[in-house]
Amino acid sequence: MNASQDVVIHIEHLTKHYGKVVALNDLNLDVYRGEIFGYLGPNGAGKTTTIRILLDLIRPTAGRATIFGLDVHRDSVRLHQRLGNLPGELALWEHLTGWELVRYLGGLRGGVDERYVGELAERLDLDMTRKVKTYSSGMKRKLGLIQALMHRPDLLILDEPTNGLDPLVQQTFYKLMDEVRDEGRTVFMSSHNLPEVEHICDRVGILRQGHLKAVERIGDLKKVRFRWMTLRTDDHVDPAAFEALEGVSDVTTHNGTVRFKVSGELDPVIKTAARYHVVDMSYEEPSLEEIFLTYYGGEEQQ
Amino acid sequence: MNFGVIFRRKLRDSRRSILGWGIGLALLGFYVAVVYPLIQGLEEINQLLESPVFQALVPNLGELDYTSPAGFLGVEFFTWAPLVLAVFGVMYGLGIVAGEEDQGTLDILLSTPVPRWLVIIEKYLALIVVVLLIMAMTWVGIAVAVVLTPDLAISLGRLAEAIFYMLPVTLLMATLALFLSTVLRSRGQAGGIAAAFIVASYFLNSLGAMAPDTVGRFRWLSFYNYYDAAAVLKNGLIWGDFLLLSAVTLVLLVLSIFFFERRDLLV
Image: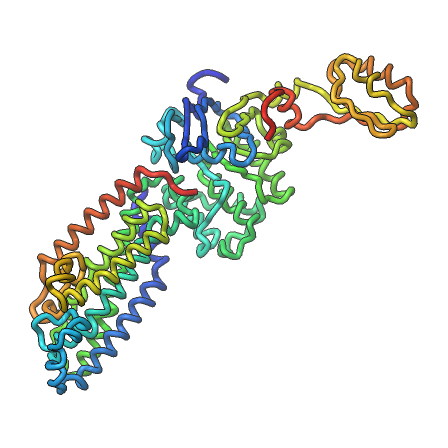
């Protein structure tokens, strides 16, 4: 996996300033062939800035990036032949129909596989004969996806791809991404939607205020396990009894209900709980965000 | 790289614009030309026009007689037509880069294997074709009037030359707008400055004719200074002016590409 010939995106000390604003600060990142890489962060973290540098739409203040070993700026034309791009703020030529738009962009790529486009349109359920200006925003996103996928690029760069897609279409999108990965192609997608990233990505990078805070495999993150336990009793619960237990933290009580985080063994918790008359108990997986906050405890909160 | 795709797209997208501007100018030309017989006999007008106030209003006359066919068309049509085309040029020039940048479609366009310079060049070539088509329609409009108006003794070939003579002015204004939009990154500012230049050109020229020692010294800044349509109608193209404007245009075009290649696209 880490063999250098399998590095698709290589980012070195990438920095971007807009005047005094630091949009991206000394970013270092490798993305490998055949993986779906989730680029996660709140709005304004620098996700789109990174993507636009990779596409040579803007130029870095310092550092460099290569894709397939080609410099994103110097070799951009050659590189773009192998890229598919879905911008976050998608703007399309409103006066064209879906087909006209696809043929225009296809023409710039030296031709378009209309059968494949037709197949994609059918799977995404998009009427390509209508003008873009009559499309809803969800339909525009679908057309945006089609134009990104239609030439079967080796690398897909997708900025918030599922934004504005309804849940059914999101499922189709996940399937499409699985197929792309199965063909050994690579996906670099930004998102601020954790469950989505958890669902389809192999690795995830967390960006915050222009800093890359972490790059982890999804599976590894989930190992930092803790759970939320909530006990409902008809007694008065003494929080101190639980706070004293190892692996228990963040205890709160409300009337007869007590809620806390548990990591490690459950036995002491169960034994303590047994002192009360337990009416109900729930045991929840934390969200990825909570895992991150635990993983990188002490970081400033967003 | 696939050449010609953007060029063809831009031409197709300009169909309505060609028809609109072309028919407009053709009708204006036709109307002015058929009115000529009414003016032809009014010799007194020439005396009136010797007053500097009127000279300021008819900047394109030169040493020609207003009541002659070339003088009349030169003043009544070829003073206004380049203004119209200059406005068209500015609008088109702003659309080459800034229009798509504002809309956001440039992000998709430049993610394809197309270098930035090619986007400018292909849209620019389409501009030349578009302007030539508008001019051809203009020529037809006036030519029909000339055929219908025996008094308007003017060579259709010279007419074509005078119309063609507006090409460098139009391209200059389009390129100025393009250049400003690549440097200033604001379509509004670029359009404002280009429009101010059009207005300034007109007044520098007309006021300059009235006050040669003051405003007149800056007349060289006006594009009208390189555009003597009445003389072209009479004697044919003035290649010196034509090439000078073209050279300035070419420099601006090269600078536009230079700056556009280097800068960040707006979000």
